[in-house]
Amino acid sequence: MLALTTFMSKNDKLSQDISRDWKTLVEFINVYCSNRHIDSDKNLFDLKTHNIQEIYGQDVFLCPSCSKLLAHALTKRSYCPMHPKPACRRCPDHCYSPAYREAIREVMQYSGKKLVLSGRLDYLFRLLF
Ligand SMILES: [Zn+2]
Image 1: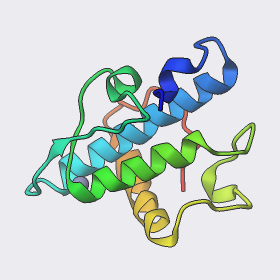
Image 2: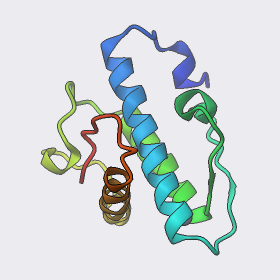
Image 3: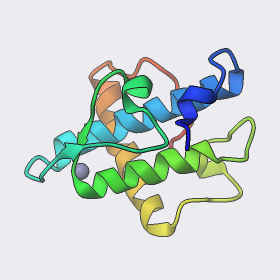
């Protein structure tokens, strides 16, 4: 399977939205894992369908549970049928399974607060849970 990032046109508004949301997801989960799972073993996050270097500009190392969550989140965002996409918490059709939904909500709250406080939140995000 081709990487989704490779065949999507760079100028396409939809693909820009999706790319930005992917970047947000990587950033949020990366911040969360680096701060909350300090003692966990981290591995290079690698997903066949998404080029993390292209999305985020650098490699990301995550613990096993955050790796699973990020893979789930990137895949769900890629196949979201809503255009334009509403904030996930306002979506009439929640696509995450309950355990992942709970996990991503915690990540969004933790990292959202942290990124705002540190002034690093330089892009809008509509993924808030
Ligand atoms: Zn983690």
